Length: 307
Image 1 (cartoon, rainbow, N blue to C red):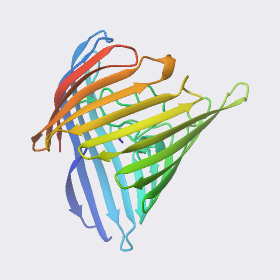
Image 2: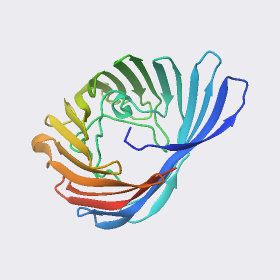
Image 3: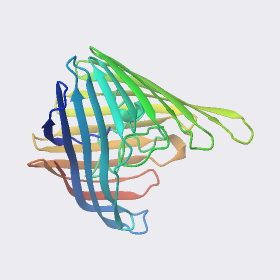
């Protein structure tokens, strides 16, 4: 998932199990954003997100979770609207094993192994190092879902592996998606790889098609620098895509960020730079400027506050 930290408020309940609680957590953001490719180039950007999670744990140490999300957003035409509660996601975990079911992220979106998004630029992360990628990533959100996603993850020491499955029976082609990922951490560096396959069937002809996608990643820290690099190719993108991002900690409160994402001849190279400065109390001032894969200049400036 994207790099947004939550501060949670817990309401502790008793329900005949070892422990149970409900947590409320999320964030708000507000500021200005600019995109020369939009009809309204400048807009007031605003969002409020609230995750509601129920957690219970048995006497044997099995942890169960269920959550859904409420969210309000602005749009490019300056309209604002709220959505949710969306479909629920469920999880059960014990030891190094965790199984997620429902409105949950698949392997690529989850960040279990691959850091798909990296260090985003701007207070909205309007540019991320996967900008030139057509990655088959689906995640938990505040909306309804056409299909249940099932994902299992296992951690054993420095090694991790995950697999996800999704079958969309609402779509006419009834696509079935399988993703697998593996990762290994050694010291301050991590390497990972993931593979995705989607099979679809034409309802008229009965002809089946298969789409493959692979991605590898390298991420870590070196002193004050955090870095992440991804390379991918597949049937859904024209050329091999590469992306990278870095975060440099100027101080305990201030950091600089930069990213680049290139998809070969199919798109323009996206690039951007930005900053983040902690104001205390969970409030961050952030902004950035860059160019997207359409060659349009983008920029933003605003605050994000966690609760």
